[in-house]
Length: 627
Image 1 (spheres, rainbow, N blue to C red):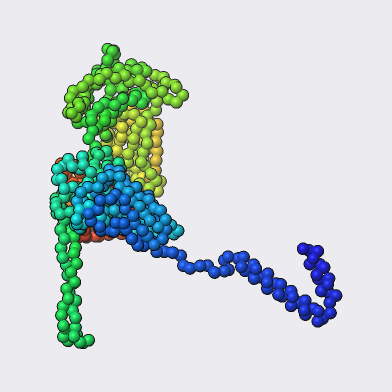
Image 2: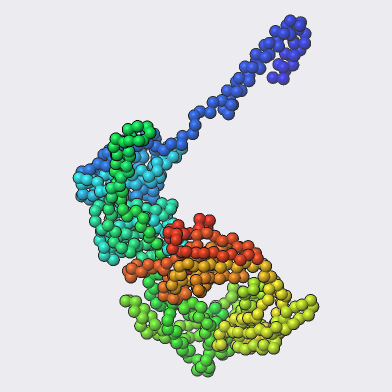
């Protein structure tokens, strides 16, 4: 190419002027032709075709037709105006009444074919809701809310039952739940029989059970993990409506006037346009997870280290077990101390007798209550071996080491202490006694330390693992905590090392206060202040129609209230067979942005807003947070 170009320009230099002109014209033509060729090759520069297809496929025919009656066949064909696909029929298609075997639903070209495996019931209306399962072949545009209906009887049932499902504890809309109805009103139906008819909740928790026959029904909702269409008590979300529901259809009308003159001075007639509407359409179901029935039994004991062992039970216990040491006549009678109970299904014991905790294995007998086959508690006695767990190096601590381990503690003393926090020390082994004159708490002014009064409170008299140091805090002041060596002595005679920590209490202007007034005061209510993760920051009862949350760190908060019907200080879930709904929960309808040095006052009429609309829209939540 380079050789050809050089020869060409040599020839051009030797030409006469009129030849130059002719040659230039030829070059221009060649360049224009080349640009045209490259322009055709560049796809971006040419025509781009029509607009992107945004339309869903259109149904052009059904065999048998949609709404057909006296149907006897089990194969159904739906035809569309373009090539279609079926997206995850098992998940996205809802068939009512539910089938034991999911029908085959497949697409071929412009057709969708449904083949029922189960025998069709006589005189029954069948509803196939495709939701977003049918999409076009190219752009995947879904055909939303297409429903195919047929009947094996001589008519189509047309009643409906509609509503919404929300989570009882958080008021979050529950999507993808199966809502089902039973004409059988017995309690056992939900536990043994598939639903008569079903629907699925959408993103907003809304549902409509379609093509219901006249009658009365029980209504339930279920997170159907096993696709059985009834409740297996294994822990999924469930809901039930308290009353029996009888669907109805009402005729409504709108009046339209025909006027004689454009000035509407006189009219010829009034036309009434009638249309049917089905009820109920606004049922509210609150979903919950039942506390599983528990069979009480003793689990394998754990000896965490030489001095500490644990007894665990399958369920929380009401009666403490008795423990007897076997084959150790030299041991003292009081050879252990039990930690304060935090969880009633897990008990921790500290071995205090040095002749015992230096042994690899201890044998004990435990007398406790155990469930029989009927789940009734009966007295039981088991013999257990407590084998010491070795560390990862397979080394056992010596008796000398056990007796001379320093007493250590963790603490909550930060550089900036919240005014509502209590100083706390948490020890690595139980404390037997303390010497208050070896503990000092001072207010610091310049370089001067001024002693201030405080208390030392142990969390348990027999097996104390925590010490609290309450004192009257002042906003914005500087303090010093000093714990001398051997101020605390453990049950093994071990003592702490010296500890010294300065800290400040936050200034008043760094806090915010929230006051909420209730024009309608509910009984047995507990009001909770929640952080951005919906964790409880503070809780309070309503006093004289008001709740005060003071000295709050500036942040965004939500407010929730539940009706503590049994006064046990906690939210309780529902019990299906006792027809017990979960305790009622309400949300203040907006998230509060509390700023430093602000007092915020709000009025909350918790009855003014429908329950399913109370949860603040800007409150982000993980599904089904439980407390």
